[in-house]
Image 1 (cartoon, rainbow, N blue to C red):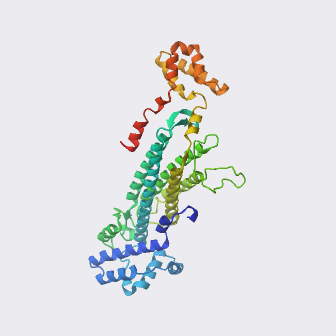
Image 2 (cartoon, rainbow, N blue to C red):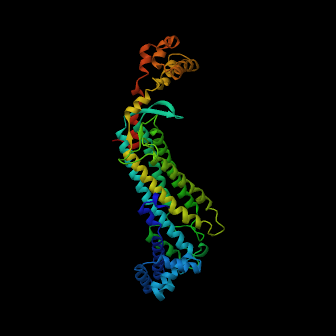
Length: 435
């Protein structure tokens, strides 16, 4: 992943140094188990930990060996032997490359998940804070981008909170599903290594033994993991798109914080563009794009092939690094989001009462008017507001057919904004619990 969209903690998980250190730990833990079983000398297992644990693995040296061997795990084991010495012959007993590679990937994805879950917690905290701040800030709700009925800006943010809370639960489930260990040898039969070794390594690394590994961990697990990241990315885009629309000049109900010295355009000094949320929209597209190759990786040949390998070398780092960056960026957007309640009120009143049309419609039906006739009567007056800029309340009061069914008092009562927000407390208690 390019540095522009990367954060150090997540990048470190995918560095060659981290990968080789995990490979060593897998091998060394396996040696401990083999020593307990009497397969290799206990002194050899101790030496492997002492010398390998103190080693500074030389990435360039491993790459050099791989250029000759054309095999990454063998290159690593050869380099490890340079530190360990004669006892290195006991390393990798009964194991196959996938035991190391797949178990390492599980460790990396689990660690990445922990960071993503922490990112999610920070985003949820920011959304909750801003939702409570604007719980009663009335704004217009829109369907198809058109004014619908009043809501509050807090309810908008509460919806986002609820959505990301679901995303968090999915991330936790995805982390648990991906965190499996395979130390089962060629074609996964444990013919040359005891299942106890797998159980021991899994426990040491915080993983669960894979029930049937067939030499590789089944890739449906990975498909679900990356699909989950794609869903999280879609939720990021949903909220980012909302901010982008609200920042449009003719709307301007909320906007990204514009810092001192910031420039919006190389040509037009007046510009304040929603660059962060536009960036998030683009990053979300990338994270979603990684889900499809992960799903295509599920169909491997027989017990194992490596068609998945090149894919995962790319999507493992790129998907998690990108999503980590995106979640952190979205949290910053929400924390610093500039909200304009006065513009929300002005936009709400822009079409002079049209947003109350449903209440008038329902009142007419309750007064005995058929729904078809009631709709016709209300729409007739609403269209005058659209076409002529008329006042909806005044048009209704002047409509003889409407007045035959409804008194002036009843009509005016239907224009009470508070009616639309009377259940906001209920929504908030459902989302955030009783406060």
